[in-house]
Amino acid sequence: MSSGGRVMGRARKHATREAMQLAQGLPLYQQNRRRYRSPGGWPQWDCLMGLAAVVAEPGYQQIASTNGDYAMVAVSQVMEFALRVEAPARWLAPTLVAELAATAPPPVTAVLIEQLPAVHLLLPPGALLDDDDYSIALITVAADAVAWGLAPGLSVAATPGMANASMYGVRLGEDGEDNAATIHLPPEAEREEVQTTMERIRRVALGAMAVMAYEPELVSSPSRRPSGHGFGVRRSRPAPQAPTWIGRDLTPLQPGDRAQSGPGAGVRAHWRRGHWHTVRHGPGRQRSRLQWYRPLLVGHA
Image (cartoon, rainbow, N blue to C red):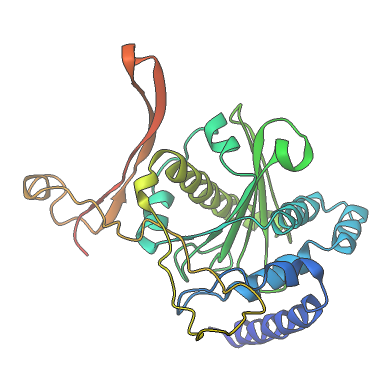
């Protein structure tokens, strides 16, 4: 990393510490900070909730609205709603994130929209990088109709989980149209990189929602954690929940030896794009559902 990058990194760490100090006095942070415990090596849940609570503050929304930064307003509203309703959290396994990023996003169906008012999706470090090469740590999704009485759709907010870093927001409607925006929008020359980041966020967010709705076998319930308390000890607050995983046991699909000995032999390892497809099922094939045709990892490392 360049000296300029190191200076910027130190400034963001300092800003993050200041934001966490501010979060200590915010009710939404106190309401959410102890709900989950993060796996080792992942961004800490309480830190992510602290930054989300600061962004969700009405003062932030007012300043952003005054400055015409409607992307910031949108992200702030998503965070505020998700914290207020204590949205559940789902941890996405590294292989799942890689495969969803290599899969065309599914259509925004009523099933996706109606399954949860809001959800936090937590990503492993380094699995999804933004245009500044910071790792996206948290994607929060809210159902527009439930949250704000808008037309059916999903609003998505994503953040690397540190202060003074870019945040990303996108609204996805049932008609397939989306209104993408980003906070701290860079100069024109860099906007293509931002749109690439937005597309990856869209794929992972919608893909995770579709997996929860249509591939429930990939969602693993958290294991119980011993309390560590003896009889007669009263716990002052509920213990943090263990993570609920999506795709924890997922392994990359690879073509057979015959395919590897053909045109793909000797090719550098890469993903062959996956997709979501509507399939008919049930009596008389009257019902429909989305099915994930996962991407293939082809070539050699």
